[in-house]
Length: 510
Image (cartoon, rainbow, N blue to C red; front, side):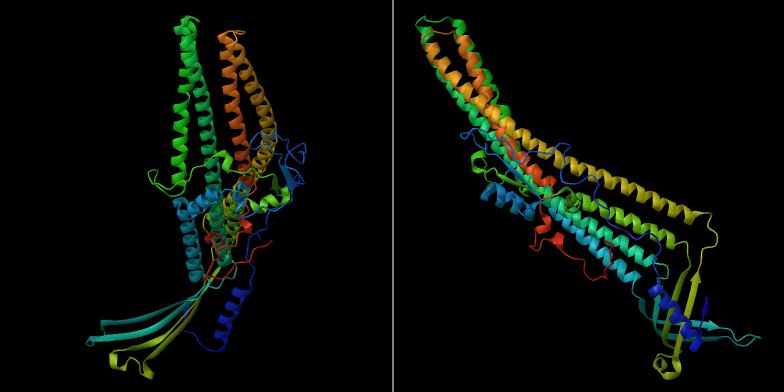
């Protein structure tokens, strides 16, 4: 390093190096957003789906046909399609109070501040002030007396590393990709939380309906047991008939505790999702008849899915980060320039420190170039390229999973409608058979065993119907989640949409 040089030629050399640092191209690959899969045209499944699902009998809840509207955009508050004010308020409370959401937002802020710190350290010159005093002893040489004196100094030091080969730009590009990754992680948390609240509320509603259906069956069996016991008292029927009925009542009653346990767990889960203790009051209760099944379902085009799913976008940012780190590793194989300068004053007395004849200054320029490192820098670049290949494979895996989620949800909705139609017809036939069997038994036309079979058939058919109704609600919510949840339409100041501040932006190739 050469120090304390001046003159027009020296200053021109410094400015030349500085200008080169500003205008040079960054080494390494320029990131490009991956193209959508070539096979993603206008459908998600091998065989095209019907434009609408089948419908169940009009008397069946959640039995309306659902129409798939291909290319229609998804609303930001997608859960509003169920038309439940209680559900809407619960989700809003969960988004505001859930600790997982708060943690994701805090991690985003951390990434933004880390980016700003890196930008401050790497982009701008470092300027530091220094004020010091020292006591020194110096020899005059040739046997002369040594002098002891104080030395006061004050200076401002400036240092800068021109980004000649793009190491700084690539480092900031990787840091910005980390910020964007965390932003999409916030969106993914937002989507998962809202979807979990919806599906748990639907599960609670389903369990309530199953418990109610089971209690209705149990009530009917107990009434029938009362009739049978009176018949037994008069000697009209054998004791085995009474025991069989009591056994049937006990079996149905035994199914209630597991359902009530599952309902309690759902209630506890809803409380935790809302950021509350399970013991806290004020949680709404959900029933299937308080939810509306949407009859029109927006379905994004497959080519748009890659820009909507937050997990795909997050995986893309990891790929972007890996691409930028290849540039960092490449730039490390080239020389690094440094510029520094200082201006200040030095004096043996503090009173004379700021006089004109006490001024001192220096300019310095340096170059550090790798000559031999045992192949370490080349190995680091190959490692960065391997990391990029791994990120690309992970991106494709995320992409495939996303398309599978949508395909599964679409097929599920189609088969759910068919299942509900079949279950509604089965429940209606079972109810009719039970009513007929009950009348025939009262007239002595059939045995008690035949009546028991009719009761069992109706009980199971009724519960199956409730489960089929709940499945349509749950798979409708799953479709909205699989399609990304409409976060791109949200403009309510959610932290996930906040831009990175206090740092220069890094352009990203489309």
